[in-house]
Image (cartoon, rainbow, N blue to C red; front, side):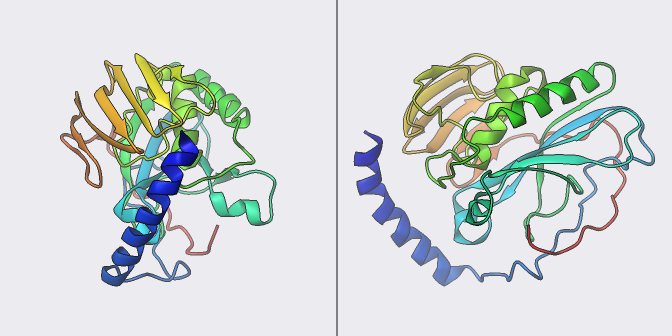
Length: 258
C-alpha cells in the first residue's frame, strides 16, 4: 500500500515543491539565523530540571508542509541544555540520524521561529530526562530517513513522547511523520496516551485526551482537540504552550550548519 501511494503522491509533491520554490525565497543556511527566541530558561538562572519539546518550519519549500521537531533537556543544576533530534542529511557521512548535542533549545531553525509544544519542570523531571535519553538511544530507525511519510525527525519526537507520556506532547498537524509506526498498525497516539491506528503513516486515526481526535490521510492531519483545530499546512488554531516560568534569552547560537 505504501508503495502504491508513493507512486501517486511523490510526483504530486514534486510539482507542489517546485511551485512553492517559485514563490519562496530560499535563504542560505549558512547565514540563516539560529538566535534563541527567549522560550527556554537560562541554566544560569534556573537550577530545576526542565524538559521542553519544540518544533519549527522545515528548511526550504518543505516548510510549507511541515515542521522539524526536537526535545531539549536540562537536568537539575546543569549549566547547559542537551538537545535530541534527528537530522536526515547526517546519513551522508554517519551511520545514524540521531543527534545528541549541546545547543540552545529555543534557537531558530535556520531562520524559522520555534514553537513550544511541551514544558515540564521541577520534581520528578530528572527521572523523565533519563527516560528521554534511553528512548532516544533506542530509536529503531536510526539508520533510516524519509521526509514523507517517515521515519523522520517527527517520527523520532513521537517515539520519545510515547516512551515518556508524562510530557503530554501534542504535536501539530504539520509534524508529518509522527504517525509513522513502521511495520506496526496499532500503537498509543503520538503523545503516548490513547490509541492510534496507522497504515504506514499514510492513513489512520488517533484519539486521546491530549491530541483529541485526528485523522491522517496521506500523511496530512486534520482534527480537533484540547489545543484547538488541527489543519494541514497551518498546524493548529488554538492556544499555544507557554513556558512554565519566565524565560530568559539564552546566549546567541552560532549560524554554522549541522
